[in-house]
Length: 106
Image (cartoon, rainbow, N blue to C red; front, side):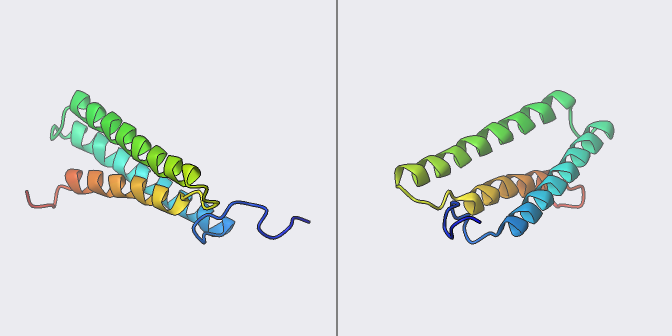
């Protein structure tokens, strides 16, 4: 049996809740991938352009997430900041979905 508090805190996310949040984010990422391929298939976007945007979004999100984690570690926090990290990636996913939504007014 483990002692209470032996694992780092995850912004009040239990392991089950964290798993659900990661699963939902994976579903959102799949929906964005489908929207990207649909945009390319219908001629609304070029493959090279979408790949460039996708890579840029991922690198930017990873950089921002790294900074959040780095500041948490430097600050000596036991809370590793998974909640804010998930928010960073979900924010990027939502922005991509809005950009590719054919019903959005531009």
